[in-house]
View 1 (spheres, helix red, strand yellow):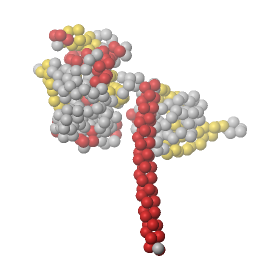
View 2 (view 1 turned 120 degrees about the vertical axis):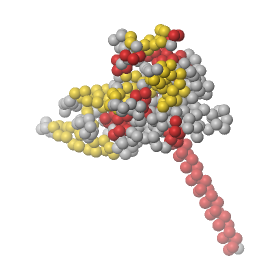
View 3 (view 1 turned 90 degrees about the horizontal axis):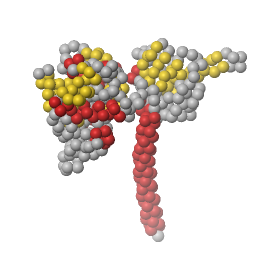
View 4 (view 1 turned 135 degrees about the horizontal axis):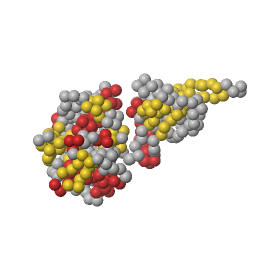
Length: 407
């Protein structure tokens, strides 16, 4: 009888243990599902907010400067801290400042309310104070590299640049000796498209989709260098920007550059600093932003073999990982899946070769430079310093492009 009771208790305990394990697994799965939904919702909300942001300027010369709402958005990183100085007056009218430091762990934060002054300590830009609004109860973060998003206008005044165009990223210029030159050259401040030009954007602007590997968020391909110039002009016109290229003689394979002052010049006399419309990057610009620009130099990661990493599988779709088991997964991939580089640019390595503006050489003007490698390339062709070329009129299912704009 006692043995039967023991066996019964063992069965009950075993059953309870199984139920506990099932419940634990259920909680784990539920948590994973919730986290996935939360991330999706957060990303959706961030995209909405980014589309509504505009440039802001902040006065930092007066203790009683007017507070203005501000968002740091995607430039914030977990683990950073925010030092704030709260200014208040006592009973006798004397002004006091209380310094506080907050540590944060979230990915983004909401707009501020009145009351605090943001203090960033960074010798490179000599920022003292920037007056902002602050919501105390909201988790917050501060950008690790404010020099990428602020520039000195004059002493005590600072500006954060936010593009009015979706998915364009500010890239600070500088002096740079590219791999294919012997002297340092100037790179202007530019905006660079965060992603390769996608098929849905091409369809919207041009009205067709020539791509071999179809997919709205896949890079457009099977487009010539001339097609890219035409796309850039149409996109510029959509946003009321002066187009960069005069294509009135495109049928004769002749083009010129349109400067902001209206002057139309030959390619050899072009000055892209004097343009405002969308255009193809020069090879110098491409190598600069693919290497991570000044931000990568500051972080000592400028000499990565590939764009954003020394490990190609982290950042690129190329011959060894593009997957060709069936037609559905063969070829190009949706943009922005792999890791971004130091500037937040995706797919500078692999996926599709990128058309650049430059000719192959002065005696081979009919061919234009390609950079970055593609889904069909071996790893040695996908390095930041790797160069290739193709005739400007040719198309290929491994060639696409991204756009830039002088600011």
